[in-house]
Amino acid sequence: MNWSVALRLGRVSNLPTVWTNVLAGSVLSGSVPRPLTLPLLLLAISFFYVAGMYLNDAFDRHFDSAAYPQRPIPSGVVAAGTVFTMGFLGLTAGESLLVAAGYGVDGGRGWPPVIAGLCLMVTIVYYNAHHKSNPLGPFLMSLCRAQVYLITALAISPFISQSVWWGMALLVAYIMGVSYIARQETLARLPNLWPLILLASPFLYGAAGAARSIGTALIYAAFLMWSFDAVRRLVRRTQADIRAGVSQLLAGIALLDALLIALAGDLGLATLAVGAALLTTLAHRFVPGT
Image (cartoon, rainbow, N blue to C red; front, side, top):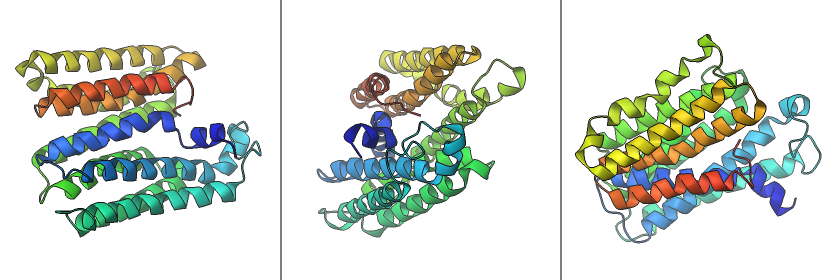
């Protein structure tokens, strides 16, 4: 398996949105992480994400053989066993890094992030094994992302703040909205519009707080316009627009993180998260995000 296939299987173009999830979880926790904790978390969650993407292709190999024969496994570029092995090794690496964050860092939080990491591993494997036949598949996917906030907070703080719970709820709503839209592939029909209610959740939540500062208001407006443009693309019926719209909404995860970080008062990190959204969009040109 060459590097191009490895990067494609891991959907690595979406990794900046994973990193902003960690940053948002850290800010929302209300505590300052130890110097080594944040790098360990960023690397651990990156392993979890890439491993999850590998397992997604491995478990979907029979479906892809009929629907997407160009995917790496059905096209014969890589063996399913190899992808399974790399996926489970990636989960093990991620969990090992959480053990290091919990016990190997001075002032580490011990078992809470380790147990939360095991829960994430179970969710990732169960989702990938059953999402095709499970109507709750989008919820399970969103739960994987929300658990990044939880793991980060548990690794940094002795308690889970209300801001973390709100952030998790909003992330779940947004990811579910993106997932259901991706399943339907178009918003051109009226019955397909209901996921927009889920996508609107962050904007309803942040409307009042966005007015507190110019920087937060600008991030709110940018996220709103970004999402509106993605939805506009999805109303069209061309495959190029549908693909671009879904990819844009995926990059918007970083903008959701940026908004939550800005609402928590850290405009510097919020600006960094905005940059991550742009980086994700650029990366999608080289490695597809879906």
